[in-house]
Length: 337
Image (cartoon, rainbow, N blue to C red; front, side):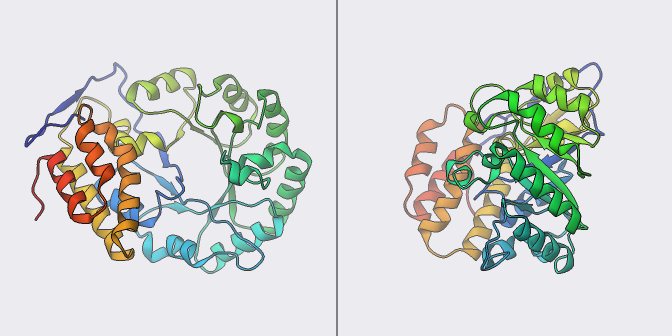
């Protein structure tokens, strides 16, 4: 997508000889602080192609399994018309079991996802997320307990290790012992964060050795990225998109369409922004809180406006909603009703 003042440029994507795989299942990755129910609803109302949404992680503790903010996010009435999977972040089997049973029995969910992929130091320092991968015996015992006690389907989102790719064969051996709903693999190490390239050699190991369905996650930003993945792994039928969808909300539906695509998306992105902005204003108080959420939106959506750095800077610097709205209107070349 390209931007222009007061008009919309049409973008033409070349058709591949074989077309794109309309059977591919596409998941929306959980992005902490961004893809909560407000974002999911605004996105789902205007864009297509996503088969399953994963919530930002729930972090149960001894005092309460699900806190009020997390409850708002997973309430069925806040997720109508979407296939949503709650993600749980913990290294305590009893807390996981309690959370999974509550999600199943009270809220009606049929699947939960265990977060073993978060690379944040504040998470991994507590032995959670990708940090749990460095304690293989404890992880094995944890999985043994939760699969014994939980009836709901359990999937896992994982990285391939903490410090070395040599960790992954041992992790995969552990995963293969349990009846996972599916394994979502971001083939980077915890120490990599989002730097460097995903390790497709280790992902290929999982493709060869895993008895359960696999989902690929990592660095799919364009049709070319997707087609490269499919050439390397033609049997993969599930992918998870995160930053790619935040940068280009059309990506999921583009990947689902075979044939030539010609889209005019500036107005739709404008409507998406306004719907999201209006919803945040309804559920949050104070200019500062709303602006913080919207500036997170622009950290990714700004990629859709190459050459508009000055206007994007005005959005970033806005401290009042009125100034923010004016900067956004000028960027889109549209007038607010």
